[in-house]
Structure formats: C-alpha cells, structure tokens
Amino acid sequence: MSTLTTPPLAPLLTQLFADAEASTEKMRQERANVPPEEVARRAQTGDYLAFYARHKDYHLAVSPETGTLLYMLARNMGARSIVEFGTSFGISTLHMAAALRDNGGGRLISTEFEPSKIAHARNNLKAANLHDLVEIREGDALETLARDLPSIDLVLMDGAKPLYLKVLKLLEPHLRVGALLVADNADWCPEYLACVRSRENGYLSVPFANDVELSMRTA
Image 1 (cartoon, rainbow, N blue to C red):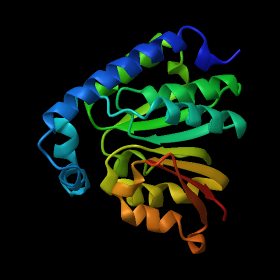
Image 2 (tube, rainbow, N blue to C red):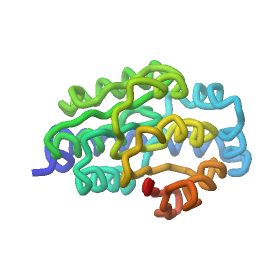
Image 3 (cartoon, rainbow, N blue to C red):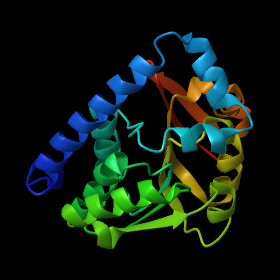
Image 4 (cartoon, rainbow, N blue to C red):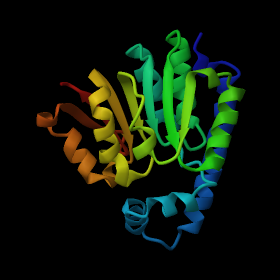
C-alpha cells in the first residue's frame, strides 16, 4: 500500500490542504488591491527575509497536484536522497518523505528560516510518523545547504524565489546525473530558468502545469 494514500498521512494531508486553501484565500483578500506583478516584485526583491516573515502564518504550499507529482517522481526513480529548499508547514515534505518510506528508507534534508513554520512542520511529520526520515535545518539556506550534503536524487525549490539560482549552485556539485529538480513558481526567478533551460549548463528542462519547472541533470 502507498503511505501517501493511507492513514495517518492521507487524512492529515486532506486537512492540511484545506487549511492551506483557507490561508491562501485570506492572503488573496489582503492582496485584493495589489496588482499581481507587484506581489511578484516584492517576492523577488533582495529583502526576501522581510517578505517571507510577513507571511509566516501562511502555508504557501504546493498544490495537491504538485505534491502528488513529487511523490510519483521520487517513487519512480527510487529516490533515497532528497533536498528541499523551503519547508513551510511541511506539506511538500510529507509527500517526499512518504515516497522515501515506500522506497524503503532514505534521507530528506529540508531548510526553513522561520522558527514557527519549523515547529508546525515537525509536528506534522510526527503525526504522519515520517519524522525519522527528515532533517530540517533552521536558518538561511545559503548557509544550511553549504555543508554536509550527500549525492542528491531529487530537489524541490520552493523557498525565497530570488535565491533559486544561488541554491542551485550550492547543490550542483552533489547532483547525480539523472537527478531531478522541481521548482515551484520558477518564473519568479528568470536567472534560474535561464540556467536550467540551457543544455550547455548540463540540464534538460520543461515547464509543467503553468507554475512548475521540471529539470533533469544530464552531466
């Protein structure tokens, strides 16, 4: 049976996605008079810490479809080593940890700078009985992902968008050939897209479902 579709994880995800949708709706209402391009601009600025600190109570979660995609990719490739940039409340973390469980084990290294979100994520991982597979590193990803990394099978980029390319460069020496990268809202970081869409840089990359970029390390 799939860990993703059975208790305790399945009902927990149902509740978390409902909570995430409620928080997204609240955020939409608060942004009703702010043009979408202005929201994107704020997220792309160098003051990303302030931007995400203001959103510490929001899930900012991947969609259910992206969560399922992450599980499917990790399962299909037999992933044992996963890195996640941006834990938030741990919804995407749960999907990938479930894949590790069903693959027979492994390690997911995630990173998050907001302490309250880390607490929520850890509680959710414990509730799903997946906490033994996940290490959450607290702090700036440019520091937490600059050390002690294994050979990486799968990466999720879902943290501060201005850092996507910098985080990628930290991870590149550890990406095995065939490693997959999933970047949520990658269009908010044109430099990242330019890098992974250039075959000269050792990637194959395609947009997926409007807001996701799926890339593979080829060299």
